[in-house]
Length: 152
Picture 1: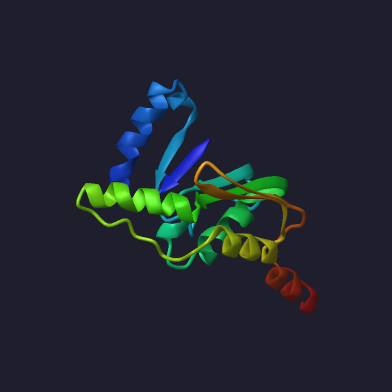
Picture 2: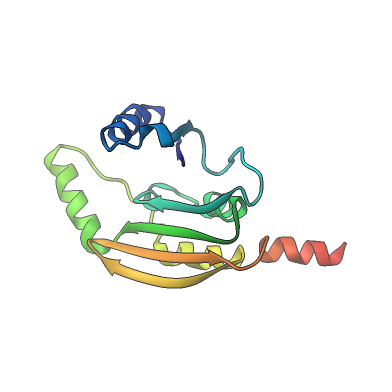
């Protein structure tokens, strides 16, 4: 399993939590931008993002990379806070004297973008202060990629 974080300061905590859970040896931690991953097309059987979407101003490149690196038949899960979840997180951050940023990107927008990349939504779930879209890659490449191959 590979985790990706653009913020290197988050990796030591992630690694410590993985070790504490007994799965540290099964994880690789990459410090890089998820919009440019070093993996071949179809490398993974699944990809997931949890509570990250709202930190990304333009999620299209990250979602396109998730779609590119997941094999046909693979699963992509996108989860982020529901409105109630955002209100709770904002209260916690305010209590700590901080502000929790929110780009405005939503799980519904991510679902629509992933459908353009060749994935089908098989489930939408709301609960535990989250919204989740579960997608399956039914075909290889985005609509754009397929159109350019046809024109060649």
